[in-house]
Image (tube, rainbow, N blue to C red):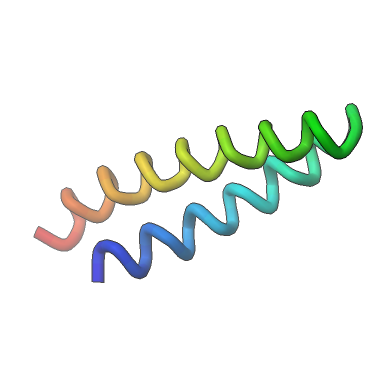
Length: 53
């Protein structure tokens, strides 16, 4: 359950990063999306470990 919810939240963060990065162009959008996805996965897994345990 942790993994599934973590990936869903990471996908949402990735979409937000893509929208913000597209202000600079497609290549920066890709990298901003990667950073946001990683951060979202980290924050989601950390939050879920405290909430669900």
